[in-house]
Length: 189
Ligand code: URA
Ligand code: SF4
Image: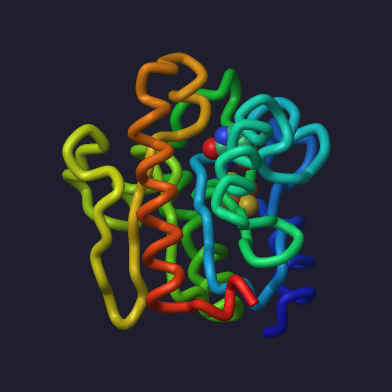
């Protein structure tokens, strides 16, 4: 299946209950051959309205961090979420919702073939890195799985609530830039 076919099927998805309350499925955005994949938790209000990931306040902060290390969602990063439909009242996705939606992410992964995956927040990190992932202890660390490097940093929404964590997040992005230069320098060409 190619990218546009996958997107077409995903935006019609009814595999979990979140389909009943969504306005738009938020499939993902960015070049479909991006070497770096960012994965958030799930759409919020503005993302649900527009069908685009990270367009609200969190998205503005994310773009600021991306820009600081010369990344750009229209050029070298693809952005998506663990669940593609907004959980009501922005609650955490339930285990069965994440499980149902993970097949879409797997297919995106197969097509995009990123070299580096950056989890934004605990929900994504616990799904993609490890069930016991602790953001406080493990943010900014890289682990390799099958030739792909995984890391996690604080969710931008968490940084808006706790700005004292911003310097740590900034360091994570600097570490990301170093990793990109090592494993996929073409991202910067
Ligand atoms: N928060 C997320 O986790 N994802 C978005 O797309 C927007 C806000
Ligand atoms: Fe389908 Fe994912 Fe939306 Fe659930 S959250 S309906 S699995 S696209």
